[in-house]
Length: 430
Image (cartoon, rainbow, N blue to C red; front, side, top):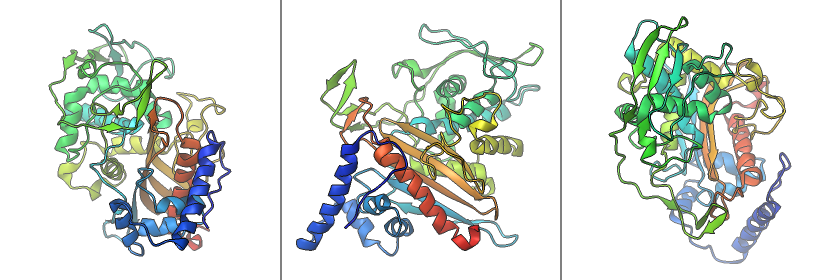
């Protein structure tokens, strides 16, 4: 029998935990007593690849009982995993081979804060494209307003000198996934530039359509704020008027779940994601690969970034909150594993000193996502790992009753450790 036991974090929904335990045990008992029941097509396809699908085999052979149970029901939890070992031999270019598990770029998941990653990249790219003398990521960025629901920003108390800058916004995005920092870069770039740039680079299934944590309509999110850039002595470097996006995403109808909470009341109908952001795991995984290994991507698909830009992004993708003075974070509220889902499950504790993780996470509406590059500091060996799990067993959105603690974070933690054991056998890590 298969038993699911996990004690690494506080469980908010013990009933789900025991349901998983009973379901897993009962399913194996019934399987032994009755003829096989036909599997859903997705599960059947994965089961038929047993022995061939590397990730499936890692899950099934794991010491973690939760991974073994979820391996056979990935579609139940909307699990998707991509693992890419990076092989290098001498002076030859590194070799990359993606291993997919239950991945479907056309199956919608809400990308949550992972959309901040391409926005941070595009902010640096846009500066390179403008190529204005004196304008760089450390220039003062003033955000103004020309519509009633927009907001202004003239200073940032979390920066060393109180100035809002692109560099400081990117730091906050990568250190703690700051929503306001993302919104300010979104408001400067605008929907047209964001989506046209991503589509031109081949990310055609990605669409970034709105700010985060602000109650603005689909139409209101089409408007970008006016912005001004100044140098350190207050000289105007660049001015951009407010704009209305002309970009229209391709028609997309996505309704999920069986209900959602609105103004304290349960609405008994599926929640509409049709006009929400989209970022498939395949695109996100490729973006991380491009920042970590730009030469592995064809030149026509690369972001316009300098080596200095790449080093800046990698630094803050891997830096821990405790390593930041500006902004500074209270370790009791924001621990070093706060945005490290894979391998740590966001649990408090001291990070592994032999491992560096370059990543971007997201979690909202029950979706838990992480896309990362792992580096073994002893050997400098790297590998890429990205994953999604959908943690909303009751099918109700906005009820703050998601299965993050009982299923999502334990899965992410166990998956990261199982893949590391595969990528780096003990003989190589000791």
